Amino acid sequence: MRLAFALVGFLALGGTAQATPVLDAGYGDRMVLQRDLPIEVAGNAEPGSRVEGTLGDDTANAQAGPDGRFRLTFSSHDAASEPMTLTVSDPTGTARLSGVLVGDVYLCSGQSNMELPVVRALNVSNELRMAGDEGLRLLQVPKVTASTPVHAFGEAAHWQAASGDTAADFSAACFYMGKQLRADHPDVPVGLIHSSWGGSAANAWLSPEGVRILYGEQPLARLRQYDQDPLAAARSFAPEWYDWYRGVSGGSEPWKDSAQLDWRPIPKFSFWNEWTGTGLDTNPNGLVWLRQTFTLTPEQAASAGSISIGAIDDLDMTFVNGAPVGYTFGWGTERTYRVPAADLKAGKNEVLIAAWNAWDTGGFYAGPDRLFFSPGDGGDAVPLGADWDYAVMRTDEAPPRAPWDALVGTGVMHNAMIAPIGPMRVKGVAWYQGEADVGQPGYADRLRELFAGWRRQFGDQARMMVVQLAGWGTPQAEPVASGWAELRQQQLDAVVADDNAALVAATDLGEPTDIHPANKNVLGKRLAMAAEGEPMPMPDSAVLTGDTIRLRLSGVEGGLRAIGGPYGLGVELCGEMQESCRFVLPALQGDTMLIRTDQGGPVARVRHAWSDAPLINLYDERGLPVPGFELPVAQP
Image (cartoon, rainbow, N blue to C red; front, side, top):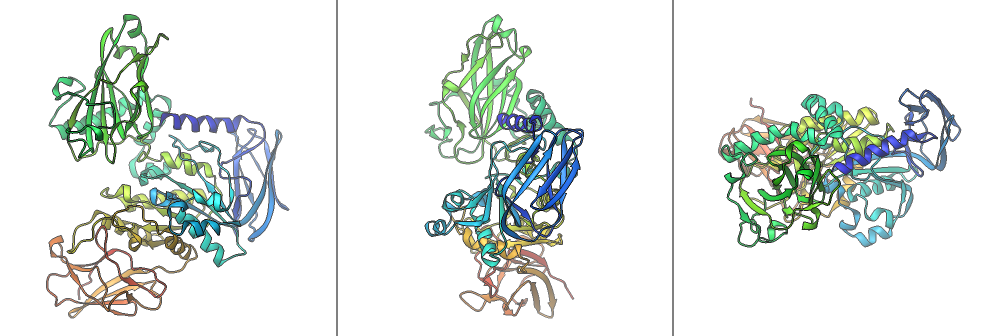
């Protein structure tokens, strides 16, 4: 994680130090620029210099600021399939981009269901055979994080024309959206920018302005502190972690006295899933303390050193002699933490690792040779060995996460994976994320600020397309409470509150045993429909008249259809309490469901597809499903 921050910062600084203007990372050879809007190009040049640009026969100029930042605005262009050249010059030289097209540009972002590549989707052999298209250009953004916005990606990234090779590892949902858009408008080039990260929370994609609006200045200040001094940042964050641990442990403080825990030798140096008979082999999730000692000479203890603990799956809070030295999330990220001399002593020193695992394997990821203490006097490293002790502390409550956390840190993915794209105009953003936010309140607010952040960067015209979560898990025979359904409702609420957004239902495309359903082919076509402004089925109103509720939907073409029978499935009537919910069978009349209330029970709300893995059979004539939702029933 620390390497990711440092690498991005180095590249960002390197861009400003080079002669010749350096464009923001999203601009490159073979890119697509957005048609029918002024074209924005930004980058770094000689501070204070005059910057001139040409795009085909069009010209623009600007003056670089004291920090070297410049922004050129070209006039709007119609769609153009003939390649053009973009040049940007200052007194030090000229940057030249070739093969530039003008068409429609889309950003695709989210977590693993957006990240899932074409090679894991359906009909992959045939799809890759037909993937070649010079008018469909792809940009894959490297996965890295940063504490503050930067202008360079963490590693080189290039625009490429779609082919079997370039599409194979590209986002399937994004690619199939672009493929459909190209089929619908063959004279309009399409540029797709894919920037997503499996397991990421919405917080990670917030702009600094969004972070400030939702959470105030503290997370931003801690991110800046982490960038300058990770040890100080960890110690600033530690009191939150202490409060959490005291709460879940009944007041225990092992960092002050490790004897408070019931220690046992680890059976072997490995993931703790392999520790047969420990309970961790059957339930590897939760918190496990790991303990080791190492011996220092007076000379070794007299100056600051560093401790390397390999990679910990998933998260660690690490202490040396009771003092916190580091916090990192990342199952494959090797940790090295600075240890001040004040926290060391001659003789025996103790290292404690509070390791948290939330999924799959937990604990040691690297071999014991990756664990050692490096004295500050330049002497030989002190091995930490393989003979550690462990103590299990069972709790279902997850620990607090630091602002620089790789997957849920506030804005860390926006800073390194969205900000460097630059201020180019985009026609829309496709967002497929939410699994990581299930059970976390305020998701609709986070989406609102995500929308606002993207529009600040890419323009107010950007259409927001939100994929409503696919079904996953065991179908239920009775109405149930559902965190997944609640998040789907927040996705719907955020779309309804926005003047230029669309909800793209994917619940019916889910697979009970795979959180990553393979049918991204159909999803891509639905995203293309939303991108082109086609109306999506959406709940509109539910009104009780006599003994019948008229539930009307907007965006329905050709009337509602129940696949496999005359009635829509998965429809519930509820009172105020979950226990009052019961399934009902609505009759269908055009864009309206007619629900009789004489089936018993109180009437306050009507729901559709309200479970983790609902059974859905309601579609319009285009094959678009009715999304999951909850509506209050208007009483007479």
